Image (cartoon, each protein chain N blue to C red):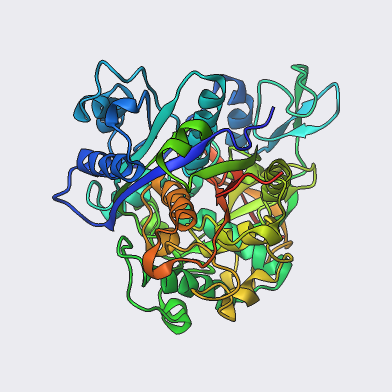
Amino acid sequence: MTFQEKPLPETNTWSEPYWEAAREEKLLLQKCSDCGKHIFYPRLLCPACFSDNIDWVEASGKGNIYTYTVVTNNAPSIFLEDMPYVIAIVRLEEGVQMLTNIVDCDHEKLSCDMPVEVTYRKLNEDFTLPVFKPV
Amino acid sequence: MSLKGKAAIIGIGEVPSGKFPERACIVSAVQSSVSAIKDAGIKREEIDTIIPTGTVYNAQYNSEMLTGRLVEELGLTGTVKTNMQVFSGGSSSSTMLKVAAGLLETGAAECILCVHSEKLASGVSGQQGIDLFSMAGVSKEWEVPYGQHYSGVAALAMQRYKYETGTTDEELAAVCVSNRKWAELNPHAMFRKPLTIEEVLSSKILSTPLHAKQSNMLADGGAAFIVTTPERAKKYTDKPVYLLGSGSKVSHFVYSQEPDLTRFAYADAAKDAFDEAGLSPEDIDVMEIYDSYPVYQLIGFEETGFCKRGEGGRLFLEGQTWPGAKYPVTTNGGMLSQGHTGAGGGVAMLVEAARQLMGKAEDRQVKDAHFAACTSTGGTYFDSYVTVLGTTIPN
């Protein structure tokens, strides 16, 4: 299939707090009340200790670029207009990793382990994506 | 309980990979199956189980295959007891063989035909292929909205691998050149024209640091292999290819959740596979290392234990992996040169390993090949498989 519009996140009921917070430009993570580990992406059960005693906490929004790439050709059709754009995996201070985009940056100056902080890109009235920019 | 020596590949079949708009997908499946049956020298009625692995270009075709279309096409309704799909993307070669060996060991089956067929070059357009693979095994909640796709997936691993190991662009390009050297000798390969490092590095960048000629090309293709018990195998051939070890681990679903994009779980998989086989990497004569992109081939080669981490690039650059050299690696040309037929990329490598051990690889035959190791992985490299095969069963 080919996208006609930018793909919106296909959400699950238990991840709704994450997307509601993102709409208000806040980055929420799950945190296991039993073992204390942070969890991303939102789960039904803590992947570390199997507990379902899970809370939501606000993340610091700070982290480092684990790895990144600048997409310059052959993107999915609906993203062709955005090229060049940056896809990255960011390691948050809380010890979790997430796929994201790096924005507001000089592509030539990006590097692995570079510090970044969260910012937001509004997709529509319902969805805002957490993305990151260099500190 | 071990599956060591409990299953043997006795026949292989394959159709050329490439762009064949006139060749229906079922033709690739039937021709590969017929070749494998003839190669094994069995009567077709001896097959009691057919395992067609997944086809992604067309959901209807896939559903036909998992509900018995091939059984009917081969005239085996009434004799085949089980037709079922075993599918894990690119690692389906290994999962099919593992399931087949388990069925044989318990007596639930005696002769199994494993088949793959795909039509990714002519069944979908180039852009449709990119769009299709932007979602295959990619989370629609956590990754698709960020513009993730397979060049991006590969580029993310490549960037970090270069950063941690110091492997150069030339060394990564040398993997493509090595695979092409083998493909030049493979009549079933999609790309057989000689390739140079300069050509690879002058091709356009898709996603930094990944060049277009470091990307596999989607292909139409098909391959099949027949697996039976060691006792039956001896009736048909004096060179059965035994399953000696199978090690594996699932290390993520969502790509960003992989703990180490420069290693994956190959080291654990290799340890289990070699321990089961009673062999070590030094005993291996042929290494069919899953590529799809050069960085994954280097990681697979290093982590399986054929050289130290970060040294693989130099071996490829020096030509030590070329035909006739010390390390025969990915001897059909891999997905970078034979073509990426979906799950078939891994099936083609398993079939190639068997072909080499059977001594049927013609111009690219590795001399005195007794033991082979195959790696494979599916989706966004969600699992790591190492499978060890041999012409004898070591103690």
